[in-house]
Every structure is written in structure tokens, then in C-alpha cells.
Amino acid sequence: MEQKSKRIAALDLIKGMSVIGMIIIHTMLIYANVKSQSESAVGSFIVFLGRGTAIFMICMGITFMTSTHQSLKSSVKRGILLLLAAFFMNFMKFIVPAVLGFAPDNFIQKYGWHGPIEQQYMYLVMLGDILQLAGISLLFVGFIREYVKNKYGILAIALLIALVSREVSGIHVDYPVFNYISDLFFSNDYPAYIYFPVFPWMSFIIIGMFFGKWYLELNYNSKQLFRNMLYVGILFVALGAPLVFLYGDYHYNGFYHMGPGGVIYFAGWTLIFLWAIFRITTKMKENKFTSLLKYCSRNLTSMYMIQWILISWGKGIFGYRQHGIAFVLMLILLYLILTFTVQALLDILKKKKSITLPQSISADETVLK
Image (tube, rainbow, N blue to C red):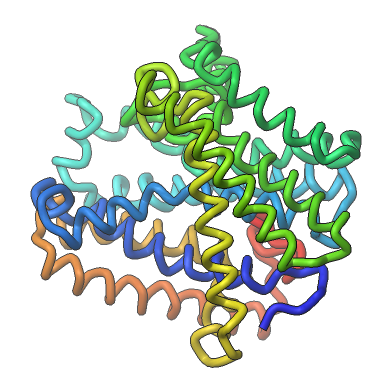
């Protein structure tokens, strides 16, 4: 299935899988009660899958380097559009339900708020998730792609960001606007506000760029690229594991605010996983399922936004973290159907009215690569 071409088919399939996976994961996190998430085999497995964010980040870095849109201007433009899309998504996720009066009380209590939710509108719109991380990262990695021509220089930048991540974690500038920017880069609070701070998470994108550059130097030899991923992945796991398990307070510090050892360790397992998926997909023939995954990959950004908005709106109907596994599995099926339905309707609208949405510039210039 994999051919010697600039586009890596395996990554399209992996990104497509991530779309389906995130609907499953987010539905579980929003609707399953704590017992179902932590004490059931199905719930624990799905929550574990939620730790696969690095897979998406590394894939984003690889495709960023192999995209036909290589200008610095294009990168900055996509970064700005992605940030706007992130704030729009938060508005739809949180403000619309609040205004219409179907934001559940226990969701509001999660943040420790005692006053009316109307007092927290700005906070909710500015909540930092993976879209903000990707948008800010695009503003910076474009400069790396433009001016750093040696792949090992790119890798060194990724490791440097990981290395200093714990040292800069928690830096906060107590001044309007600047305090939000500093939180986007260095926040160490959880759960709240910024879930994926740039330090250390941008490291994964830049590690992906390292492999994207390597892929170009290999003359688009994907088989050799993924073999290299396996070797580097094993090395990273060997280096990161002792740091994580012996000095976890500093080098791991929780999934969302990893130190250098955590970044290296998770990146290693991610690279090994990508190699394994590549091996599987090379034996796959084109079929309806692979076509579906490629469709998801092409519409990754819009489907990410759609599923989060729908799942957030559903809290007003189904409640927040109140259900057992059986009911949540039915909700997962429901939200899969709804997400694909809304995306299909958007496709029809774009064809009929030539609507260009902020999150889908073109098939090859997707904001979230």
C-alpha cells in the first residue's frame, strides 16, 4: 500500500484512526463516572488511549516538513487560523450551552466556582487545549523549518525544549494578556486553563519535524524512515525509562506537564508504535475502511471541533460524568454517527456554496497537519 511518494499513506491512516479514537476517548471522559473510567477494563483502556497525544503531535511534525506549502508565511497564517478556530470552538463548547441554560451544575463545580457561570465566560473561551498548542507551535516551527537546515539541529531544539521544560514550568506574568500568554507556554496547573503548555509539548512536534527532514533526505523512502523510527524509539525508551521511574517527580510530573525524561520516554514509545502501525498498514489493501480513515485525516481539524462541540452540548442532555460503561458505549456510537453526519453536511454546504471554513484551507494545507 505504501509507495515511494512525498505523502506517507501510513500517517494518513494513523491520523484517521486518531479522529475516531478521540471521539471515543472524549465521550468516555465526559460521560462516564469515575468508577467506570478507573475500575472497568473498557474504561481504563479507553482512558489509557487518551495518553496517545504524542502520536498526533509527531505526525503533525512529519507532515509539516513534507507539506507542499513550505513558506514561513503559510505556517504563520495557519497558526493564526488555528488559534482563531480554537477560540471559536471554546465559544461553541461552553458559552452556547451556558447562555441557553443547559450547562450541568456538576461541570461548573469541577472548577470550584460558586458564582454564576456568566462570570467565567472569558475563562472558558480562553481554555487552552490541543488546538491552542498546535496554533502557537506553528507560529514558531515555521522559523525552524525556514532557517534550520540540519536535521540534527532540529532534533537538538526539540530536546532543548524538553530539557528546560521543568525549569520554566509555572512561570506566570501577573499582567493582563501577558499572564495568558505565559500560561500557554509554561502553565503547570491541572485540571484547568491550559492542558497542553507549549513547554514541553512542542518538543513532540519538532521531533516529528526531525523525522520529516530525514524522510526528505532518504528520497521519500518510507520503509527506511520507519525503520529509523524504531531504532530511535528504542534508544529513547532506554534513555527515558530510568529517568521516569527513578526520578519521576522531576522527569514525569504527570502526563500534561512532563519533564525531559518523560518527553524522551513517551516519544520513544510513540516512535515504536508508529513503526508497528506502518508495518501493519503496508499489508493492507485499499478498502472502504481505509478510505474512511483517509477521509477523517483530510478533515481532522473540523471533525475535532465538531465532536467536541457536540459532546459538550450533550452534557445538558445526558449529564456530566454520571453513567456506567454500557450507556457510555451507546453514547460513543451516537457521537460517531453525529460527528460524521455533521461533517458530511458541511461537505455538502461547501460544495453548494463554495464556503471556505477557517479550519480547512485545502486538502493539502490542512491547518492541523
